[in-house]
Structures are given as structure tokens and as C-alpha cells.
Length: 311
Ligand code: PSU
Ligand code: MN
Image (cartoon, rainbow, N blue to C red):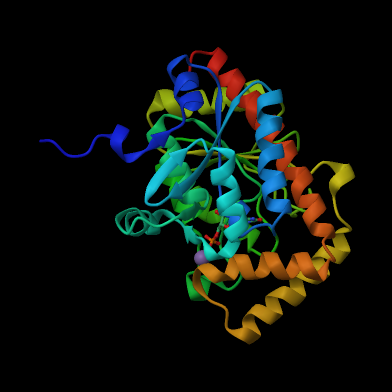
């Protein structure tokens, strides 16, 4: 048959490769949050700090991005800096963009969907990010539904996040996750969190109260061979919740601006994130950074608990 083996398709860093071979906990991290989710130079500082938090919490970080057409699982500092400096000039890569960017030997920053797909190929079971994409407001008409949701339906990986931003339609996002067969558990709460705020008004389908409980769900997903994923939604720590009202007001204004300007397709999310950031005078960025680090702590502990069960 021939064909290219995974070894020649993915560039797995020696550290990540060693950890995977030894059954040590590994945590995947995405790169669109670096290129499109935060501005230079906070994006690089945050990426490095999140990696450090994963290490301190007992796991090996594997930041994923595409460099000249090669998916890298675990990045060197210079590579991270390259993606961070170029920012939105780097192609945003969701599942549908993977073949294009690889064939054209481009650089690419992977979203939750592409990161999950690549992480699973590399044998990684836990992935930490800030927030996932979802059903956009008006998505029942535009059909703008993030590929993150369908990815979770087809990839056996646990994604640890702070829920979904209220730039999205959260009730419909939860509906699509159910349709996709994704197990969704809120961490230490009964309510599905909404990124900047622990409150979305939506009850989470399930609840876990420890890394071990979350790992047990991941283990059930794997043993059943469901092929679908698990979403662990961790509420923003209380001390980091930005003035809820201020962020909400910024979100409403950003949504109106996006509609006025006719922003469409994969530019919608980066546009809204940037507008909310600047309308809150950067205060949303500080909260964003803190919640990602909090997720990294929970995700690393979950990966360690999962590895301890021999997963
Ligand atoms: N939400 C955030 N920050 C982000 C993203 C979403 O709060 O950086 C990024 C993630 O990479 C996510 C992607 O996978 O946006 C979703 O984009 P879209 O809505 O175009 O699917
Ligand atoms: Mn979209």
C-alpha cells in the first residue's frame, strides 16, 4: 500500500514523543488563540506561561501549529514566537483547512477543531484551551456553526475550556453538542459557564467535581470506543471575572458592529474577540489570560489522573 506514515506527516517534539511513549500525561494546546485570540506580545507571553502552568501541574505541554505545511505537536520557543509575531497574518486553520495548508506548505494556527484532530492523531487525550467555538447568534439562519462542535462529535479527546463566550448562542451550542453526541460536564458547578462569567443561565448536562471524575468520563469514552469527545467546562475563577456588565455591553456592541460591517465566515470570531478586547480597554484580556491558566491547571491534573489509570 505504501502511503505516508504518521511519522512523516507530524513533527512530534522529542519531549512530547518521550512522554507519550512512557505513558506520561500530555496536554495539547491550540494556536489560533495565539495568532487570532490575543494581541502581540501578550499572546507569546501567555502561550509560554500556559505551557509553564501545565508543566508545574505535572504534565507535558504540546502546543500544536503548522509550520511550512508540517503539523508540529510540541513547539520550540522560536516557532511559537514566529506564530505570535505574525498574528492574524497566519492562516487560521480549522479541520477543513488542514489539507490546504499542508499541501501548500503554509504556516497555520490551529483552531480547536484542527488541534483536536491533530492531537488525537498523535495519541494525546487531553486538550486545554480558553473557549470553544459554537453556534453563532443567528446561526439557525446563517448556519455559522463552528467546526469545533462537529469535531468534538467525531474525535475521542477531552477538551477543557471555560465554556463558550456569550458572543455565541449558548443554548443552541449545547443543543448541537448533544446532537453530536458530546459528553459535556461543568467543573464544580451545575451551570454551563460562559467564559468571562460563570453564569450562562443554562444548566450543564453533567457535573464533575475533581480531575479524577473528569478522567473517569474520558476513560468511559475510550473504553466504549464511542469515537466522540468530552467537553469539560471550567468556570472562570471568581477573582478573574471581569465586570460582567461591562463585558456584556461590549459584546452587544461588537455583535451590532459585525452585523453592520457584514463580517462573515471564519472572520466573525476573531472580529468579535478583538472588538470586545478593545471596547473593554484590555480588561477582558487580563481575565482571558487568567482563565486559560486556570483551565491549564485543571486539564493537566485531569491528564495526570487519566494517565494514572493507565489510559
Ligand atoms: N473563542 C475564544 N477565543 C479563541 C477562539 C474562540 O474565546 O481564540 C478561537 C478558537 O481557536 C476556536 C475558534 O476554535 O476561535 C473558533 O472559530 P470559529 O468560530 O470560526 O469556528
Ligand atoms: Mn464560523
